[in-house]
Amino acid sequence: MIREKWNQILQNKEVRQNLSCLRKEIKDYRQRRILTELIEGEEDALISLLADEDAKTRKNAALLMGDLSLQKILEPVRLAVER
Image 1: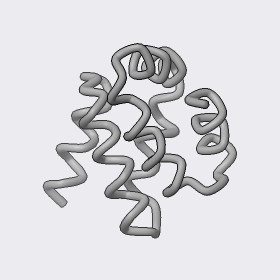
Image 2 (image 1 turned 135 degrees about the horizontal axis):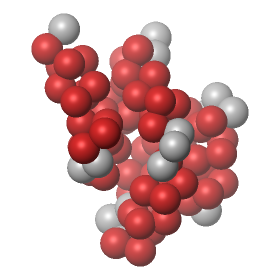
Image 3 (image 1 turned 135 degrees about the vertical axis):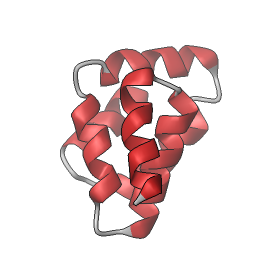
Image 4 (image 1 turned 180 degrees about the vertical axis):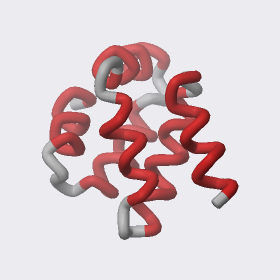
């Protein structure tokens, strides 16, 4: 399920809903590790969602990034909040 949702985000399909679903799924540590591994090397795809035209998509992306607490993606969140 994690892989499917992430792939749909990469394909720009139902992004807001998939981000929300991923946030729920990664409450389980094992699922969080799976997503972290999937995102590795694709961080820019997630970071780019901070500039999405849909405010809820931006919010869900920022919250997911915060939930994951990956150093590589936290700095763009901080910069986006400061804007």
